[in-house]
Image (cartoon, rainbow, N blue to C red):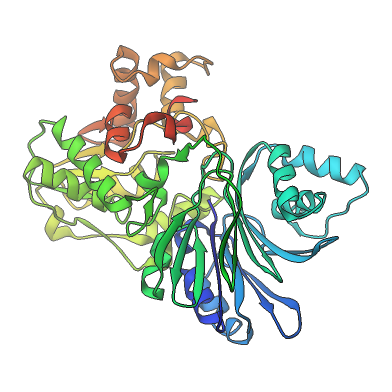
Length: 465
């Protein structure tokens, strides 16, 4: 999932834009980009850098100082180089996107047959953001173009679009990816994460609704299209993806994670010396567990700076393994001879948890390691973001193949947490991880911890719906 940020006001926006985009660094590992509209020159100034081996701040620290203008957008991208600048019949614009187009190749081929060409290629692959931009140019105006684009794509894409008149913010029709508007004296901001607002002086003004389109200008906020009635925001935002200091739909990420930990403790009777969480995203789940179980919270593992980033999001297993190896440092004095509950946000592939987390605890003489997972087993690859890419990657599916002897289409019995097959699957994963015990959160408890109605959440990766 990429992270978007934009700002417009009376004064030069470059400092706010730079730091606002940087507050989204946890959402992508591949590319970073900034685009500023230079009012006097009536042109868009853009910079894009590869951030796979360095942080956004270090790559853009010199560049952003020369990007003068009162409006701009930026992105931390999980794949594509962006923002893209496009010329159209209704003027030039820069566009940044967050999401995933399932029918990307089909759309690209269709546009090429109609005579359109693509100039932005990453490793020989047509840039998805350019496809979105080209689809928008087919409209009679920007709003019509955005609507036509939404009609064409399969998947989920939210966009920021920078023009001479301001910044258009459009949230995907499913409401899967968040967009929030902030306000302070003389300026408006829009971002994927509300944590980008507070230290920059913005207060939350509005959560953009699914399919809604809003124009931010020097003169204020103007709704261009009403929100759709359907809202199915990604539940994984609260469990793992989102930043602890952010809120979505007015619901705090940190509070939800504490509640999931309490739910895990409520359904558990294991006797341990302390509870903990896999840093950083499992920390609040572990705090909640400790609160619910009435045991101390301690840190057997600590993360060495934020510079190592997340081991879940990089595209290659080799990079994921390197990050997982280096980022967590064990504290032997806390681990030795102790029985512990270790809360994890999720088990996706399971290889990092087994090889680079649990193994460090055993190597430092842990007495018992009990893993408690804040969400149910992941069963399906995400259709809306670049996270998991196939069922073959998922730990739960490996367990099912081992138990069944082959891949099976109907995994309903394994999704049902009350079934014998679910119990067998969890036991297989427990043995694969090499832990004392393993328990997952139930889907119903996870939904209760989030606090939204089930129909307002995307739960696809757990239940295929």
